[in-house]
Image 1: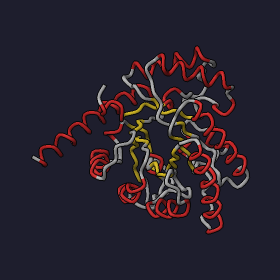
Image 2: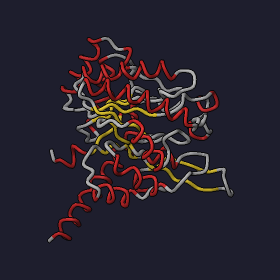
Image 3: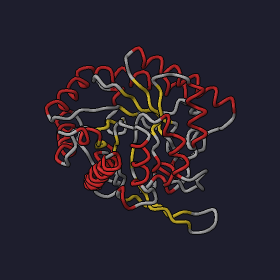
Image 4: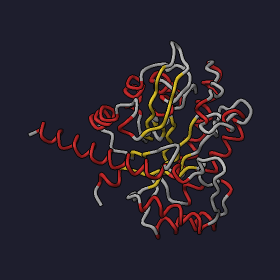
Length: 313
């Protein structure tokens, strides 16, 4: 296995129920069957998300069973991510903070070194009832100084608890949240001020928004690069139907959408990024799309590294 193979990570997002009416099993036998599908797609590393399993509700024995299944299949997990558990949720922020600390303990038991968080709001009714939740705008974060202070204090609590377990924390960009621009990333990093805290510039979360973009994806990415410690990669087509919207958005493989990943990956490598690159996808046969995107990414990174070596000769 090459270092390149290890840097490209598959996501359990492809194992989540994405089609209304679909059913999935539960328990270790189901977990093994689902994870085996990612292994067959060529992934040796897998990004774990609590939208796949309710990690905070698992018993110690169940967590150990999952660890054994990962080892049996030859899979390693670089990170355990949370979804829609924002620590600045107006009603559930304190509860979500406690939940995030529990997730740290689960990650530690699984011997993981990274945990992912975000300001993703809970889905509203119209989003849950839609085939694609992003077709409807969710609640936007309060961007007052008071809310920034709350975010910094609570994330500092998470980072300090994580440091005691030798875990790094990364926070994911999300549309219309407190973290959705390059300036937001700079401000949040300075406010939290922890060495085990970094940014996950998931550009796809922004490009798929049905609200106008606050800045170009490239400006956002460049501003995040100095703070980038983890990276979710997915792509969407985005068409403006009229000035200021609405916008027509559809998920695609990495090489097909509005984000130029050849440019993004080139800039990331030039900046010295060597961390995981997690391919994600929503809709349709998500496993196939992740496999297709991973092959694109392997070829692209190999080409860019060869170009760099030739330039140095």
